[in-house]
Figure (tube, rainbow, N blue to C red):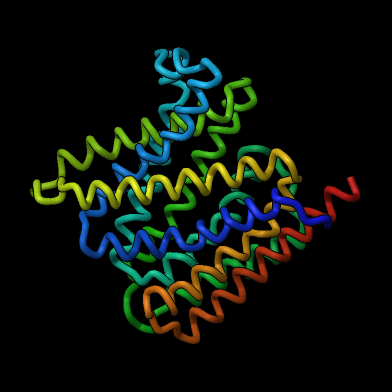
Length: 291
């Protein structure tokens, strides 16, 4: 595999994706999670708005027809983001970063149910590894499950359902930039509305907190831009092989950035999840090469 700048961009995107949950965890400890997720979600739409303006597509973005098309994509995105920001306040940064890696599990299951994709025995075993990894991370002996861990596990499910509906829009020739701008902008507006009707404090609306929301939103946008610019140049299967890097970055970042103590269960969960991701990636590459 010849190295070029595409892989450097992809490496940057996956590194930031591994660090983003840790940054989120750090800031929600002192800032209202709903306020923070509202600002960051809307902010993440800005680069895609710029691309729409450059492509002279902005008029279509505010049409009633597109609003109807994007509504559920944006709603599911808003729910997923809300669960992530609220959930990480209730659990550790380590658990947040590792449990978010469960997204391929949902991708496989939803693809089989709604898209009729055939699941091989190897994919089932790889997924089982990842499920066992998630169980190892959230297991707390005889005590009840941590609500934050449950929220984090549900977050990628919402994202995958959003992606599933977004794929239907792509099949209808709606551009990627329209979908990404719509899911972030309208999803952010939904979160703003929910924040306004639930928040009992106006202290959260200050310049510092607003700036943190902008910062997290721009990081989210950079991750998305890195990913989509990469898969334009290289196969998705090749790009997906970089995903285990995010789990490693999250684990190391929790230790060195958040100063968290990582337990044996989390290490076991890490190896099971990363092992399952690598196994699935290899199966996908083999399928592409032999098809």
